Length: 442
Image (cartoon, rainbow, N blue to C red; front, side, top):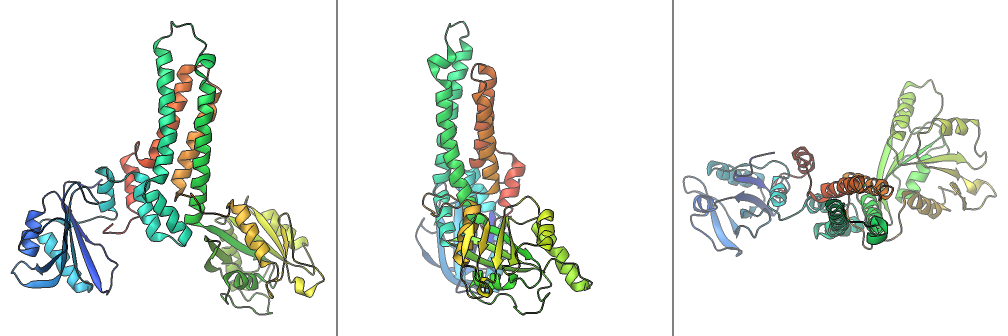
């Protein structure tokens, strides 16, 4: 971890030209920076028109200065923001002046890290900042905003508090072993544990939905050449994202397209037709297709509805990794088939669009999407792992009710797992990994 006593500075606006550029500074003592940059002190929380000064008194820029005194600032320290013109040269000169006055360049996420260390945000809220910035849909942005407002943390803390209360009860029982009591009958440990486990399951479901909104689905289209994979990609995307011809082997490399289905980001991957070929370029594309399958969440196997699943398709299915598979019978416009869905098999026409909505719905169903973003909070893979570990410890604890020492230990492990989400329990290396994903100036 970096030295949290240093004064730090960074450009907080995106690189390049813009109407406004913001240089942000966080420090223990703002007076030297005000004197050197502004030539005077400014009142807290008031936008002050100011000239930003170089070391020789020359004016670097003319803009707005804002001062947020500690502890009532984003980082919990004194924060000074200089809002000037958005040219990269101007911002560089302001940044160099801050460095001359004793600040150092902030590392990625260091402002947010200081906010966490100073108790202004917990870890889940800090991560929600970057989730809000990176949100790929309105639903994902709303979920991130809920987490940033502390909704996710409050739900996790409610479960954690219930476990702490239950642990305290068990520890009290252990402190008075001479009392002749029936632990289960007199204290209903199983009932209390079940209530906490149900709350945890509800939080896990909400978090899982939030992770889906944040990360989306990786869906790969596979099949023999000329079965309509590129046509299906275009139908799902709503425009011509891939070249479509009647020539087998037109798609020779992996094509990627980002889209949304009901607010869920969909990362659609079109691949070369899976077949034996002597064409070295096509063979490279097929090899890449198999490599992409290892990273996919769902595979969509296209077959020609005129022929159905044959030996070649059966061989492809046998080689697939353990992921959900939807078999799409395409080109029903050339047959007497109607658009329909039977389990994980769908009959449609990518060319005329018939049955495409059936595929969209099935993709969301396989992903576990409930169809509404109401109450969903933004969550990450590490949050899901922590929630699942906590649930596993509670499941073990349920079988140890009559062994209070072991019961209490499982409760502690579950409590610690939940604490990792908000940062109540953390390791420095975890903080380094999390905040390194942030922008500089955030």
